[in-house]
Length: 576
Image (cartoon, rainbow, N blue to C red; front, top):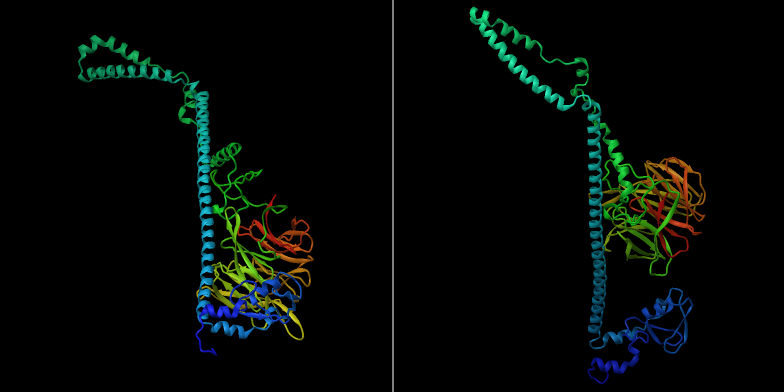
């Protein structure tokens, strides 16, 4: 300094007074901006917050209330007071204080992230506990169901035994009493034993040739042999043979098991609540434990089989869940991760939130990506979030870290979808002085390197200059063409298959579970068609709101929908 004194940090603060700190946040300036009307200084961050709260072209000085016009490029174009910046930077201990404040700010951010992460972990623990309780409850219900089934099987076994006993008694025992057979057998046994002994004695006498004995006992021997000739005989041998118990003709045929189980199943369903369970206790928040049983039970291979109900053709719908992000922006796009079932939404000009699929619905929204050029979002088959950012596709891991990017050539990317094999299907537009052309690009994934390579393109000269997100199903591409208000269909090799004659198409999604295509049109309806038959299955009313983005949930049974000029999205379950 001019007087050669060494000033301390408090001395400099005394000299600068209030000029060294922002009048709004009372923090030492880092990037002071001078207001042209009064030359007062305000930090850039505070100016941005002030201008964000109002739509005026002027900003008011927080010290003297003088109004300064905001430059066309924003508050960043206000002049920076470089002299004040240098004075603050050269203040003894200023750099050290700035370093400490920067480290402190990062530490606070890390602490806040850790707290948020802890909340998420606690929420996951709670969800896991709930799932564990649900699992135990389901096991108990299965055991109760099995016990009911065992009781019915035992009852049916007793009925069959009684039926066999009755048949035997009515058919055989009335004609052939077991006690009579026992008495006859005993008399026959005695007669045969005595007769055998008599015959044996007579044969010995004859063989010995004792004539004296033969002459003397001839009358006795003849009498005994005569008695043997009077043995008891069957009254009617033919009838007895017909009634022989060996000819029992009541048999159990294995082919009748299905009939028996069918009978048991119908009986059980009269008494036991029809059981349904979330797929693996996870993937369908729309199927609740208290859902009413279907009017017609599903056929199953076993009465103990527990499965999710097959969804009938869509004819109406019910609201499963409605979510509105905490920020006050419009929801523009929705997409669903087919690996985890999570829902991602694009709001405003470029903020992406991910809602986690839990047994209790879609919860714990997580702010994931912020960019001001995002036009569409999707999930890769590796659970990466894909963001369409003008001339590139950016891939983010679920921990927010950057994964990879795919750059465009001369075109701009507008929409992206991912098929089950991992293909990227990109709606792109190429513009030059002569024309604007829209076409579809297909990128294939190298599963070894995890990178994408260009496969082929199609649609040139056929599509208009304005098309939407493409769906791929059963070796065909379905392209919503906004310019012609129709759906154009292309074969797997990119050859044009023809248009689907409907109008005012705005978005579409395909449900493989029901072989259905859901088409959003300008009307306040979603139309549901058979993909192959193209027959109209039904319509879904959307309360006078025009749906502008739609995606199917992981199980293909619910639709995630957002609407034009609305700040929420719906999850719709389809019911008969």
